[in-house]
Length: 170
Length: 162
Image 1: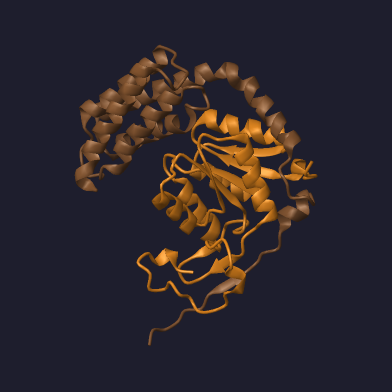
Image 2: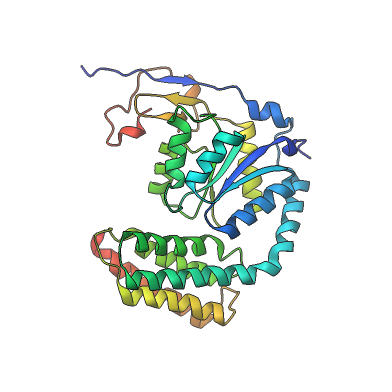
């Protein structure tokens, strides 16, 4: 038994596919989460985010209009975002390194590769609770630190400023 | 000498941990069991869900045939991507495999390149056949041969661009 009070969590589940949304909501409810908000696209999710200020966002990548990655960028950098530090778990069928890098560079905290599995969902939820990453602010990026280890020791200058992809600087 | 830009690194307060507590840091096995049971309870709906997804894919394919523009192409990719991500959950692993091949074809061909109609139809047709025949395992030899052929055709199509 882990002793987590998941019933105290407020989670926003964003997916344009109604079946996937229902699956995610079912899993979260079974975990004990009682406050679950849903959104079927990025625009609606942004509105719900501002109204409800969730503790965690579970987000699909590929949606019509504003994509999941677009939404994360807004969450992290828009002055109207209620909580730029909110943990974002991206649920996606994209598993190539290029896609992972792109989402990471937008500010995602954790990934779940579809098809969704109960254990993975629990594991990512526990990860954002127990192992939050430090945040980084540079001229080109604001979001969770994209290095998994050793970051606490680094206090030097921005070393990736001349990198090919400016948003990769940290 | 290059100008060095500052980097700010900080740890926000862990409000989440403060809210949910929990001292052991492990997975909540009881909650996971409840979730598995809840998904089992949804299984009776999976047949309808996969049928909806297949129908959405066929409709998106028809729309792309009628008006092959960026919007219909994106809609077709989303439909394929949805199936790729969830058909295995709905007990149709081979449909997920074909949809993965279709997603790769649409996603990796540059936006300026026209999508090959025959190969799109072959994927959509394969998904419909597997669904219609109710092949819910991943060991049907004929279906596996079809999947392998589709993968190979997509590889051929994408190879000159690698």
